[in-house]
Length: 138
Image 1 (cartoon, rainbow, N blue to C red):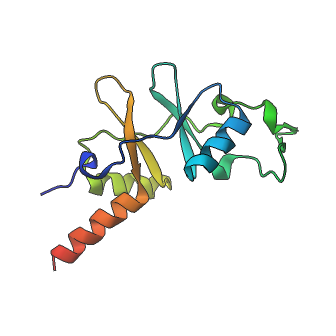
Image 2 (image 1 turned 120 degrees about the vertical axis):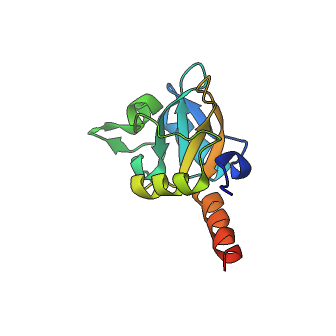
């Protein structure tokens, strides 16, 4: 039996809109203690991701990024695009391979019909399932 993403995904997706400022992105990541946020369009469809590793390092409210003050950058300018996504019917094993291949620790889960974000699959969710599967197959 194959475990599906829908069986283990989080039902909340931490997302920002394309126009979110650098400060908004940082505040969202801190508030929800996440390492990345999904960037969504006006219809709640993921268009990219911004991870903490992609943000300019800052010791104050501003930092430089490409020679400009980071506070002028928006999510649309900072994101990696296109967003890598999963559907609820994707197997957890397939999701694990995709995460490893792309070096991604969390992925938005989308409705296959509307393309809207339904939730998030985290690497810890995948690890927990694969560990349980390995333990029960012994």
